[in-house]
Length: 215
Length: 144
Image (tube, rainbow over all chains, first blue to last red; front, side, top):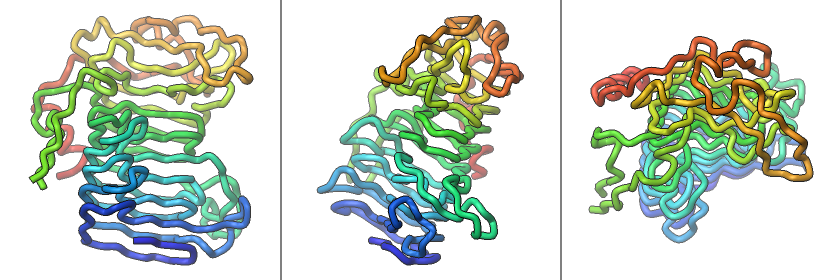
């Protein structure tokens, strides 16, 4: 499923994505160079209650959900597992203001390395109005993206549950349960990791030690 | 039915520290306006962190406070930050601050965060939790 350019408040609910060739859901906007104040981007995507299994059968740099130049997305109560790479990816910060909550993500990064179940980049900050509640003042600073109460298992080759890579900014990771994870912080600024439970070790609890997923 | 192969835990991240700034370097302010606080980390790693630091510049580390580190031998856990760097053209001569290399938490707390507050104030080291305690924490955090 492709969400492209001018879209507002698109909702993808209670759907099942299985054995997709590439991304299950991809959201892509455009800008005028670094000026993202125009309308041609998805804003307010809502993904809730979806189930994604075996993502990226043919193309490996793929996810359950990938967004680029997209802002204000909500991902809630989704289950995503069995993928070659990160299952949820924010390619850039754009306007930020995203909410990711109560998701279960595991068995990511099965065929690659470096990433985690969630991965963010920010190699080119862009100007948007998302930081301003009245949406009038344009800024290079995005609104804060909140990642709250997610259950993330960084098994297989994942390095951490939330891989805030390459200049990622203004993420608040709060009260997440992160298994086989450490907190990654590669460049960028304004990231807060607070109130999380982080386990970097093995235990004898079956659901924390066995990377099996019936299908 | 698809059964993925069981993961092996002999490689990272199973032995990774609780938090770090892998491959970053002090001059890029990786930790400015950042915070690592109120987290609980259970680990088998000998080091709690893997951050960059410099005696003159603490901006590569987030503000650290009120964390709990759960380890098999609480007396053995060590805290360090290092002068490394991934970008030689920007790399400057770096000096590890006092109380910042392979020290226990009590010594580590003598250092400062980027905002001048005490490093890891309110943080503590504790024994590993039981499986029941881990499961309880999961239910409590995720509210299910």
